[in-house]
Length: 499
Image (cartoon, rainbow, N blue to C red; front, side, top):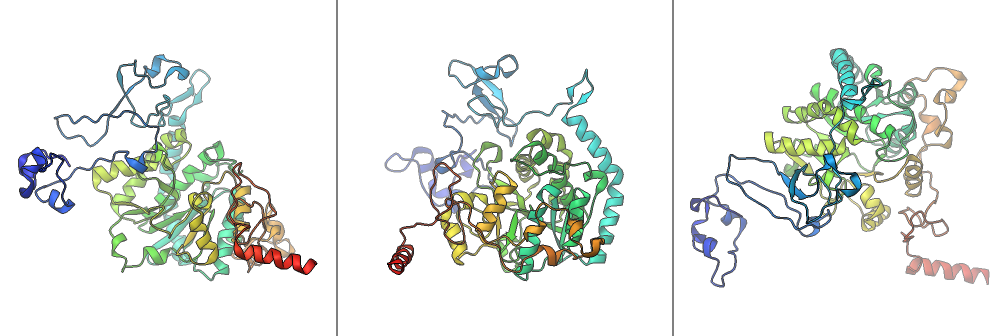
């Protein structure tokens, strides 16, 4: 702790704070004592110990006397990017210190780049900024109509529980994952009456309605988005879907509803709203927005590492303005190919500027909301889940390259509830007699009452051992230990039976 005046130093440490203790060491005391004379406290996050996720550098920290500034400005020993080839931008001690964006890597890569006005002005090809202007024009011209229609729909369907709606968006490429969420929740008897789905095409609208969930198709704003599935994180289809993920939350919180937003690659073990609505859990009641931990330590997500695929947001003015700002920053979202890293930076700014209270549940110290980090790396958590010992409310199959692998991982976790006939087919063909899809008319054809299990990879978590399946990763670390006593005993019994 650094003090700006002698009056801020604790009364009992006036000497030791300036001269050290009897051994000449920096004085140590409790946090409450150290802050006892402070009228205000300014907190700076620094990469120390296990939080050192970027490549190590010889960092120096300079405090300059001036008017207060709550931003970090960074200087690096790198060449001028505007006049240097990308291959020659690496950090070198021979360069003078120059001012760069704070999320710049030692290899000379700026994680945040400015979106362009024009992609090619001579050819009339618009850049991200002009594309976003057009999207905003459509949004603003139709905002009042959308809000009115949504209010009427939610009232008619009674799609609110404790002033909260669960919001999801989907295109036909990811529709099977939506079906699995609905079917899994129904199998467990969980209440999803307040789920509102924002499809981006008529096919996924048909499915959502056929599964009996409240559905709103904002065709003017979302109808032109791609129908295919994203092949990987950040690809053009993935990036295009970010607009839908932002708009559906903006609509709902501006209607005054609290929102649990979630991606479609999620299954519920228990109703997560029971956690967020638990008034006895006073520790979380004062937060404006609460996130699942993403698990990534990349600089562009630090220091929050908030996962934008599962979060709870209260419909107050602070949270409303967070998502209004995210909507306005749509050109930057398009440039970054994901809204998560942009949202994290807005959260940091609003936390500092407006006092917006943001909570990210620790990926190690809490076990309520596991995701892809846990599935692929923290197998203690996954063993607790498959053995029924976990306190988890959900499993979010993030950190997974494509839909095909998500399906396989969910199947071998015993968390797949969609009949094969509903995978990759025209949902209209499933309606008996060739009629129209009506509210809930696809449930019997698509949903299995019991999980549909199959093995795919022995080096990924599974409900049952998959010893005979191949590996998907080069390391090929098996999730189940074939030498565990129970499996050795089983093998001996089989050999004895054969003899």
